[in-house]
Length: 113
Image (tube, rainbow, N blue to C red):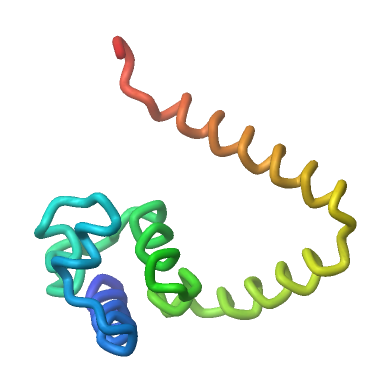
């Protein structure tokens, strides 16, 4: 089950970096059981934004937590490409990425809010 792989990886990375589930959840601004539930496999498919936020706090790549095949090579490829861009080109890509994420959030936002 993917959740258990994610849980095992998350628990290992937390231990390596001196975190416990409560501290990580608190620093991420999540409920106190969120990280524990991921580790224990109660959340079969954690949301990408959740894993991404945890990875940021832990100082690791999302692919290290998910164990997704090929994700490491994609991360490496993106990092290599990014390092070749000029600062102005990076700024443009950041604006495009932010616009894309905002458009996605708008599509999934509950109506009436």
